[in-house]
Image 1: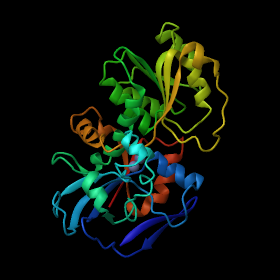
Image 2: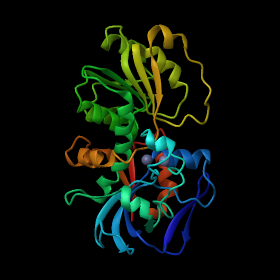
Image 3: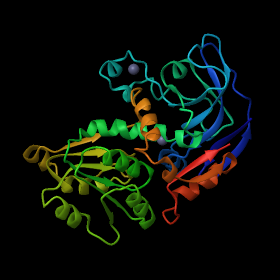
Image 4: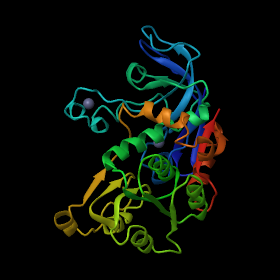
Length: 342
Ligand SMILES: [Zn+2]
Ligand SMILES: [Zn+2]
């Protein structure tokens, strides 16, 4: 079968590898669609994974083989699932901090989402594999993982009715956050970016205020919308750590910043730490997804809270993964979500 392996920046290779063999409790999927995630782009551009890695984790497919002992699924089932599975018993899991479980990042799909066939371990099959509703396409179902991650992040935000929320970054994650928020009782959702295309898409999703920070002052917009109070919540959905000091400035007293992006490139920033005590602000990090957000995400796609049709702007073939990453990473391209199809 074909698998697309990362070797270096701009060097993805189509490799011929063996179809994985499945064991007890496992299933083999024929890949149907896999979303290209911002973290795939980040890994490929900043070389944070080893050469030979098959990226892709927003996978959907049809089950073509089931191992002994599998009772939940059968051949022909259309499924979507997660890439990491927690152990449910460690110190972190007992405190519902599943994403920090040491086993979480050790569990992976084999070999990765950008491959013709994928083996799912017994743990994946048992805990984090879900049927796709008949009315939902494989492409639309690839959004379940990023939507579930955003649901996970918004739990940490503890959003209250009437809140004013600012999202920094109008890429796929930013506009998913925006759509989820527009279905809550929040007052105003603002979103900022440098791409006029992405901001115009954000408007289509009903986000109240779009701010192009190339031309406009975000602070002026926040002051106007919140009557100089500052925003209740800022969600940072762009991997730019210098956004954090600005987010802290834009918060109302008692407000909260949610960091939803890898800040690995320039991790050190200076923030106004005086605001913690006198203004009771908080900064919360959130990563990936727990086992309990997937079903809600699938529901949000099927009930239209997330407009999957509008989100997915491009479909590309599996042997175009390298081109897809360069294309989706370019700030000048008119692209929202790219889905790789086989
Ligand atoms: Zn993802
Ligand atoms: Zn654990």
